[in-house]
Length: 157
Ligand SMILES: [Zn+2]
Image (cartoon, rainbow, N blue to C red; front, side, top):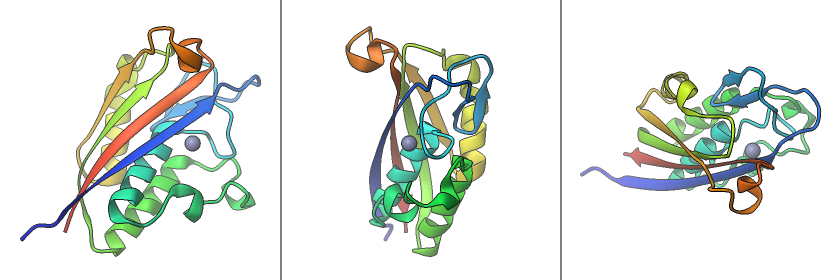
């Protein structure tokens, strides 16, 4: 019998005032405002990591990669995601698929969607889908103050 587990991940980052690059799912968005964060602030990598850890019952990303740890300052979050994938597999799980929503007024996600899906699928060795949504000018995300990301992951054993 196959055991299935679902996990949910959420992340939100505020736009930075300096000229750091915007990186989502390991894809650099040239000419777009970057996000504030201890690591590279890749909200997609963080939300997917949390969805995987949640599904496996392994806690959350903050527990495994604390933002007080200088080791993760400016870290490539796709590397964090790959480390999470290893932990999840070591616990006996296979990744079924991952689905992601990126919510922001800008940038447009669609032109980068393929590249993002490809990066995620390579890190997960499983299908990944990415969808972009606008917040219809509602709330902080709607005012363009940051980017929010939602992810679900399915694991099997
Ligand atoms: Zn984050």
